[in-house]
Length: 427
View 1: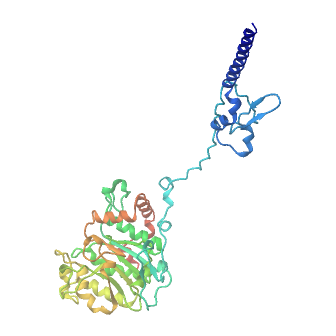
View 2: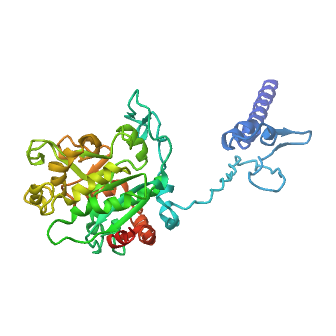
View 3: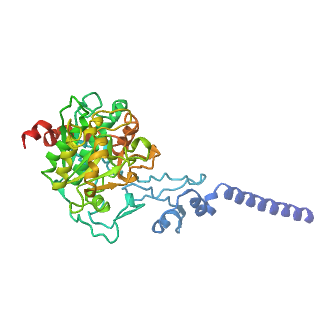
């Protein structure tokens, strides 16, 4: 009997401990946040500053354990702690990130008012007239000759002039005197018109005087024979002038002509005229085998020898003149030049000491000609005026610049346009 009581007591004891154990286990499993609250918060709450750590840790007091939620970002309300349900882990709080304000968009050049954008605001002289060297875009410099004191030390401004002579109308679509020249109609863009625009822009950039002269026509010879007589009229108003053909261009718009004259050792004290030789081919040689001098680019000095030379050149092709055989150069015959042929065959030899022959590589031709005349400073595109010259124009007047400067050219016509008749009448 006593043994039975002992067994019953043992069973009751085991049952009691079993019930207590199961109750504790049930309580523990149904409250995971009680023992691991800080770990759970760390897993679901983003990193926050040290000052607010207390809002995300477990806070205990004498009455109960309370879980304080982290404050919600980007609100103006004070933080308010909330209780996490006993049977549900804390859910992550959405954090709003404040985006920085975007700066106001600036006008792109294409939408800006380009009508006031002038050549002299687009390109600036890269060197002074007597700077020791000129390096295009900072590379492959050209240097002034050593042991030669530069003659030109200050910009000439309006004392230097750039001259275009033209007898053709150039008023078809895409040409100089049409309403518009634009790359939107690139097939219409006229190469010689673009070359002329290059001369005007170059003069504007450096402050030179620019002339566009509408010349009259001849009945017995090519109109290019007008050069010596008309150029002499304009030169009298300036110290130095440059004549340049419409198919020739200033290859470096930022390079002052004064620097080039120093580079080529040109001054009114030692010469009257400077011009480049032609490419070394048989058809570019005169009767004695010398290369012609290309009259499509000439630098002229205002001195007596220049005017004497130009008078003889002007009369070269006249009947009964100083050079009777010069009449053969009145008009083209195959490759034979006209005014250039008369000058290069006759006039030049009477003024050899007054003429400087410039390098064909620097002052004539273009790289694609494969003649050794690359036009490093003066590009002269005598072949391919309908395509190659247009490409050269595009290289100096890309995009909206062509139509912008052409419009300004037309607007300023009254400041540079004149005629042969007006020049003759002016004396």
